[in-house]
Length: 498
Image 1 (tube, rainbow, N blue to C red):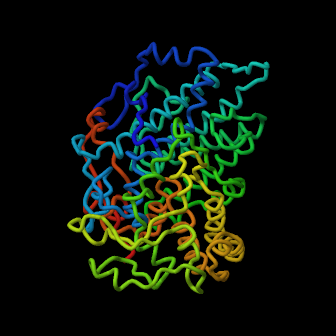
Image 2: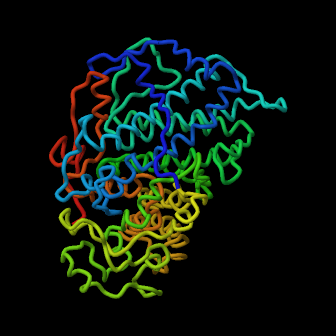
């Protein structure tokens, strides 16, 4: 296993001359290295081949937001000071330290830069293809331009969408942006709108073309225009469903649009095959490796109601625990012994709070932890199915939603009783499945699930601010969120789950 890896960041902000009024005044610096990287069709194709890898590696990175969001959602737990896990899970919650000098500033800084690096590369590709009419031809003479174009729109959508999911604002820059004018900072809602528009262009390109991606672009299975389109559709549904910062925002989502995207979404688990060289999943590693993350007792209690939802009795809690479930019991989710492992001790630091303690770890990724070369699921088919069910629920199609849930992993793997076709049962089942079946898969799934239901602990930041280092570069005023910083219910949680 490679513990740390480093990537060269071509952040789009580095190519911008910034004014002091929350805007970007862009100038073409004619960077010779940048120009060389896009001078020939083969160069452009080569850059396109790395776009999905860039998104994957930074969204699943050790020093990105994934682990902090995981513990902040009370999905995982860890008292380690690494990558803000302790600070982001403190009770009561504290404000995010957004100063460049903060020891864990990389958590939101690296990811922010990486997404704009991804955006910059995607835009440059599209500028060549759409703006200049570049044609990319394979060795056999076939036209690969639509393939490269589709992946560039997908990269553009992922970059804008992931900034919109986890930051309060950012800069919307596409191949159509006038780079001679100032670019104003935009709220996350505009980032999400732009992201989905880019994904629509990816889907449209796929609908009128036939191609097969080179195997290294997304290793593990063959991706044709059909699979790329499915991924783009599912991402659009994910963005629309997961972007709300509170329950009121969630109720206002265009759920008919979510259903349309999900109906055309993934029919397989999106799980690139790791090789421990160019593809590796540090989120799946550090959330589950021995001595690192544990499963929060909130999750344990959801599967086995006899287990406490919070660790409140200190060292004496062990004696008060019921026997762990090892076989099917009515009312207990079978996945507690299929996907999770009971442990009889915990090595977390007592002085940082017994509320970090847990008696379970997640074992579903143990094959990956043993080999580092298995597929790593970050968007399961089950997630797309839940997006369908959620959209149906919001359109009062409770029978359709219940049918999807009862045909899924809740029954087949969890051994739970079927649910009825009522709003309350469907909503509870979707919440349960996102926390259990999708546990620890893609970055921020549990966080977004809790956020849109007003269930994050009081004071938890609902999104990150633009990183302090970038605020300084952009000559913008410093700010942050969390505890009581920002607007209650919009920037930090004024709800909670206990």
